[in-house]
Image 1: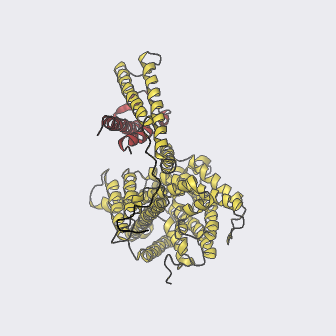
Image 2 (image 1 turned 90 degrees about the horizontal axis):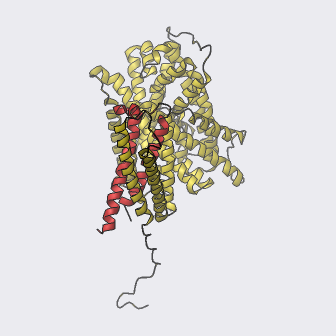
Image 3 (image 1 turned 45 degrees about the horizontal axis):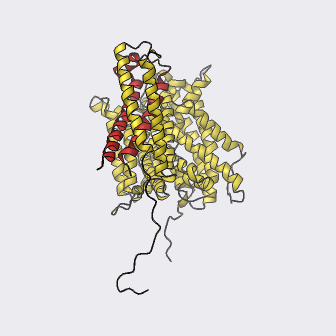
Length: 72
Length: 513
């Protein structure tokens, strides 16, 4: 495996982790696990906006990461 | 020459039974309680509204099913009307809706079992419902892989048994001394009724199973429209009678918190036998729906794979059982993930969402075919065209507004995934990859900008303490670096070399042209 391939896989993996974490964080936010809503001062009114933001961010990151990890 | 393929053997009665059996599932047993909690006795109005909204689209199914009686249902209609992305989107939502439907039925089954059987044996924990739901999905995955030859006959027997029990319940209710005159509320919030309609709409879904099996219906021009419309009308009568009896027997305040209001009311009038009978009916309804939905999702995935939209791996047929086992297992995994939430309200709304989009696409296909193929032979025509399909689209989409926000987010994601899956297959791998590289660069740039603004105090995070602000800053910088690197790598990726034109193999030694 060449240097570029290795870097591509590592960055892809990191981006995938970022995407998954964004998804998990959206879940934490929705169920207010570890009191994250108060910690980040997020009101109930803005909750779904933040959730949408994290889910879309997570989805795009995972999709991009898949291109890097499973490079053809 | 011996004719192979599907044979037209289903008459009006079995076709109608298939529609009714497809629609009556665990939903009516377990979702009525929450709906009663939302609007009380006005749930009867919600059920009637659902039935009418359902009939608008069932008319479109009847016209298209009679005119195009080939296998595939909605997917076939939109393939002929639109082709391309729209037909893929229809197939996609048909696939997803069936998985949601299977998950809903599995969770409904788990609720009935845990509330009325397990709770008498041992205390029910938080994990009981998801575990039972997963178990039942696993069982029917195996059943569908093995392929049950007599599944059609057994399904009809189960549906007849289910209808007999429900009729017995209705009859016992009307002849019971406990029956009190039903009092409708003096004033009900119309928004509450619409919210309950959006929630309970799921109980009418599944009748379009007739469209999936239309290639096996005798005299399709006559039988399909009659069966579809009979099913739609019969469901309205059955559901309203069930709800009417239940509400007349038990006070609304008691029913709102019950796991299954119907089973609870059956116990009041028929004693323990009534409860057992209705538990049996609920489990039959749930099990037959899980089975049908797992089978349906695998066939849709198979068709999408055959047309090149899904990976070819889903086309694999089991050597011994002759079933699309990979498609069955892949769908069952997604169904299991959804069922593992164990949240019936969420899964119910998600099923509504998938089917509402499917209904909209069927109505759009009808309008397109009426315009572009006016000479197509139509044994049945939707009355009051174009108002009926337009009403079908408008009322279905209107219900979407009242669906839980989390489900709408999930639905948006599913559309995004559909767009991505379609374009990756159809537009080309490299162009999509470069596009995603661009998106990653934008995300990285945006995150870096946010970090910069927070770091220079241009934006102050109100109510967040300094250590948390520092942690956010570090995370943003890390994320922006990863996104920018990923973007650069995707944008600068080399395209695959084009395929060499086909050339005949070189002649073998000793071979003369």
